[in-house]
Length: 87
Image 1 (spheres, one colour):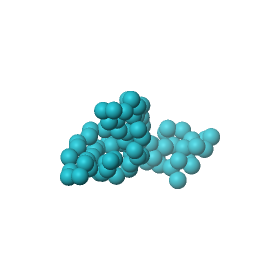
Image 2 (tube, one colour):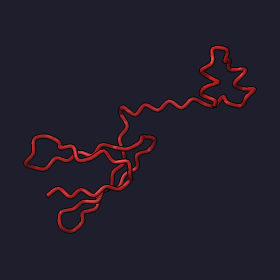
Image 3 (cartoon, one colour):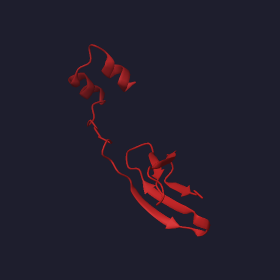
């Protein structure tokens, strides 16, 4: 409802204050954001990644092995735990 009111051509900051719909603007630039990753080696070559994604919806997970020249896209994950099971 607040979004519709703010989009109206007659909307002003004063009107927004009276209605209680003026809040602090949150501008987060995620272009340089980097999640904090923790990895735990499991048996059988699996690795469990846990991460904090902060204000983003998820993270892209890539992998590069010693004999590979490029990073390989593994997943776009929205949960804070991912099991890497590349064999």
